[in-house]
Image (cartoon, rainbow, N blue to C red; front, side):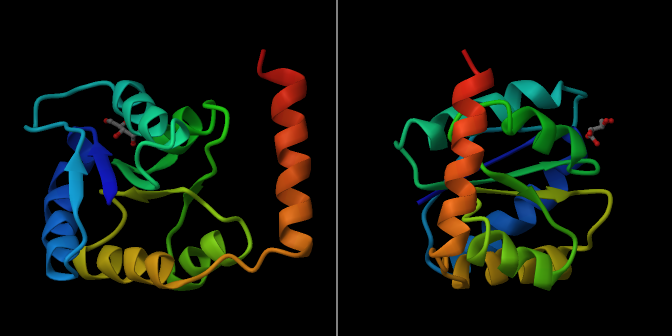
Length: 148
Ligand code: RB5
């Protein structure tokens, strides 16, 4: 199960990715937005990030115009590792090295095929653990120090 959310700038890509995930027989929860009326990306970033951080859904995808706002917002929620990616290598590394639990994409940056390739690379990769887990533990310590 994946939760996917966007603002108006990511709506078209969200629709395309829902079809892609359906073709892969992956269940999707759509957290909105549902139309092209201008909305505020932090509201949707928060909604998806809270669902992932609570453990109710294992991972999420967020899309805004550039992906920048969504990644800034989602990474404020403790436990979230949101990775903004623009190529397949980054998408694979986001899982292998960073164990990203949210993938962030730019709807005004990527075409549909590229976005599907990025999501596929992230989904098909596995976290390598080891020294990378140690580094993520350090990130968690930073979170504990500053997120009170
Ligand atoms: C909305 O126009 C745009 O600012 C938003 O989609 C996103 O790109 C913000 O980072």
